[in-house]
Length: 568
Ligand code: ATP
Ligand code: MG
Image (cartoon, rainbow, N blue to C red):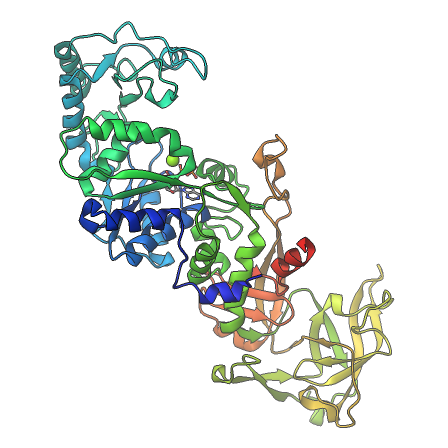
């Protein structure tokens, strides 16, 4: 079994796969004169999610490997759902992931003139016609698998009539939805996509880029392949759900006055992750109904959410390199992605102490010269196995906070942490022994009274006696306050919706827990987006907007390793 760390090392050397094999073969055959040009074509109707990151790593990765180019191209053909916020968000996310559009940012809307001209070319060649029927009728007439399609009564208009009508559609003489332009292919074709697909529809909706220059908008099928051809794309790579559009992609290109090698489409399996929904439509719903705080909520599988959560871009890239591309849909365990994140953070995150759910510890034999408590500064390494990360000084005093969970009045079996009569180590501090606890009227512990052994500074006992556990702490008077969010899965089911229910039915309504934490003083200096390890608790990312707020990125335990063990 390859561990995440080993695969990480292979990051720079992706293994071969069917797409890379195809490109190698194309290059050997002199197709495209050995050129490789890919693109990443999102529709700006939402933010990018982890699934898009797979497509980005693949398309930009191929360009890098083969000395080619890759452009970000917005598929902005549907003004009703698109927004400048999404355009800007996608540009920022791509950059954060570590990729750059080779030749500036492209927009399908830049090609509206050329696309229109080519539509007239189809009309002139008897390959497209204006249909007066409404969308419902057209859809009905398409038939289905094993069911014949029905030809539109408008299918055999003359080229001249079609041209006149199409120009009227463009020029505003026709109402929205009253006419469409359709390709004239084959209403009996076994592939539904070839049953006279719609190429243009009228929408009097202003467009983010073209304003109200156009009311005629191309469909995805008409815009996509043609945009590829205009840009000189060689390998048009998309997910499997577009496989049945592939013959239409070919049909369009083969009927246009193009010279040279034409781009061709290849499909790969989309990324599915357990406990995760990767559909912009559903993610938008979570945002709109207030289930999450926004597209960049740290629970969201969006690039913006993962960034806020503290996932390093390099860990996402390494994960994508590890899982590779395939032709069959499958679902990858989210724990694998998390193990890449953990491996990387383990190596580079500084260690700190923070207490999420504090109870007070008073050390009854702590010296108080002149009546005021003594403070001892203890020196602690910032990383257990990387000296270059240095050390820091932490104040230790007679009043400390520890986790509520690290003390029990009535300990269950095998509980080795603090309990009356038991000695534990305070990490890098002293050994303490609990004597008694104060409780409130409900029996909740409010304060633990302990003694300490002054000989154990730094967490070592001179007589070599052992303690069974080491717990973290902060000095009460010196602690800084912080807000800490811990997260559970946003979707409780590993495969949301797989049992025939709605994906959103599996929403975990308790996916976020918020704590008013007490943190060691140096955490006041955390910069936005820094990720640190809180000893014993996991990795936590400072919020990009407010560095006194922390999000738990991942816990410390390698759950991927456990899954692998269970599978054996
Ligand atoms: P969504 O269903 O989330 O809206 P989409 O495919 O409609 O996704 P686009 O903006 O059209 O979103 O996608 C841009 C590119 O990203 C497409 O080439 C698409 O194939 C690819 N893509 C989308 N989702 C995934 C995924 N889960 N895994 C891999 N690639 C994906
Ligand atoms: Mg789409």
